[in-house]
Structures are given as C-alpha cells and as structure tokens.
Length: 356
Image (cartoon, rainbow, N blue to C red; front, side, top):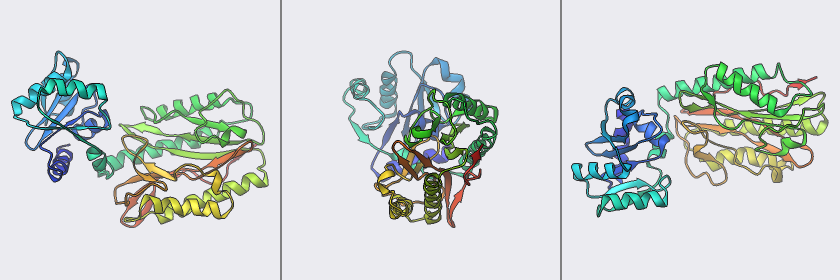
C-alpha cells in the first residue's frame, strides 16, 4: 500500500497538488488497504492520515498500520479540517466525482477559509494498472466464475425459472469461496435474451430458448465478469448464425488487444465484424470495460475509448447481438493486457452448449 501512496503522491506532485482528500470508498481501499465502510484518507507529500470513527480504530491499525489515524467524534469534515490545520495544509484537493454538492459545502464550511480544488481520476488512473497481488486475486475470481458456469450448465433444464437459476449461481459463487456475486446476476431467456441487462425474472425456460447468463464473483474485493449464452434444444439456423458471429467478433477483439491500442480500436475489431454481417444496429453497447475493485472501471472498450491499453490492465470483451422479439447472444471474457497481447483469464467453453 505504501507503494500505491507513493504513486499517488507523484500524480499529485505532477499536478501541483500539495494535499488531497480521498473520499471514494473504493479509492480509499486501494491506496490504504482499509476496507471499513466509513473514513476519509488525507494524503500529503509527507503524511497519510485516515479519519474514521471509534468503530474502526482497531481495524485501521490491522489493515493499514502505515497510516496515522485521526478519530472523529462529531462531523467527519470537522476532523479533516482539524488535521489540515495541524499539518499546515493551505489548499486541499478533493475527488469531484465522488463528493456530493452538500458534502462539499460541509467540507468548505469546516475548512473555514482553506481553499479546495476539484480533481478527477487521480486514483482511478493508478487503479487501471494491476500489480501482481491484484492479478493473482483477479485470476482466482475468474476461476470461480469458470467453475460456477461449469456447474450451472449441469443443472439448467426447461421449466426452471430465471430467478431460480440466478439464486443457484449466487449460491455456487459463494460456495466456491467468493464473498458474493459482483453485480445483479443476469439470466435472460427466450425473447428476453434480447435485453442486454435482463436481470432474472419469473419466466420459465422453454425449449428453443436462447439463455444468456451474465455473472461474476467478488473475491477478496476484486471482481470477475463473464457471460455465456446457451440454447435449450436444437438451435435454429438464425440462432446459430448470430452465435457464431458474436463468437468470432469476440475472438477478433481479443486478438487485437495489445499495448498501445486504444479502447476505440479494440472495440472496432468486434463492432466492424458484426456490422459487416448485417447486425451493426443490434450491438448498441461497448465491447468491454476495465475490471478490478469495481466491476465497471477504466479503461473503456467502446467508440469513446481514448485510453491506450497498457500491460497490467484487465478488461472485459463482450460483444453481443440483440434481436427484438427473437432473442440475443452475448459472450464475455476477462482479458489481461500483457506485453505479448491479450491473455484470456476466463477459460470455460465458448462453444454453443445445447441442453436437451
């Protein structure tokens, strides 16, 4: 964690920032290691202080022994202001994307004349590049997702409700060692599979249905994210057609991933292939997104993705085709950017599984 704080300090120095308040819980966890639900991190060139309340004093000492701790008994921004005055801070940067207007007003009132400076994305930029410890955890989160899929396909059968499958997925994910699923599990069958975010309903699975399963595991704070589409009974020619197109689009995007390519270019590898086959209007979301402490984080693989990919980034690749009143297909993998290209972390089969 001290290395992460050092990297943040360099970012701050490069931007002329003398002190910064980290309020976003995920960013705070990243730079300090503290996982409690309440607290603010105050970082300067020489000091790192965590402001929290009585409930977490022992936890902070265990998880972040390198930090100074400031206990607040009243309003937390009052304790932040007191720490700023004690450290001689003359200007304080804050995370403009994570502090509400009301909270900023409270902070300014507490600081009583110490000016504030809005900044965006400093910690998020650091989080894009995963270290070896993070990658080991993400690999295990991906492994849990693989094992979960391999188990659930043994259980799925016509007549089951989507909600029943979602509950089983959640149970298996936790049984495999994860703390929870990494987002609301998507189970969408039949015509509902044309809904990109079709969270599970009471619909029963029927013969002939395409079934999209989109889920992931939170393991030691890090997320995996995987999607597979299966079919109940013999697939129609149309179902096979769109499945094969999506499968190939994903392979092309993964093959395109390498250091220096932008998220836009990786997205185009999948999007252009789908468009050439006449389904461009039925792929309306980005090809992927960053993955880490949050299930959706930078960088983006989309037409708006300007960030060049770099070794240590983990992204999803998830092209899809969604045909209203027919059904849809999405296939998603987690991919590590390496010096040699894209390393796929999710290994369960992507061949079309047919359940009779």
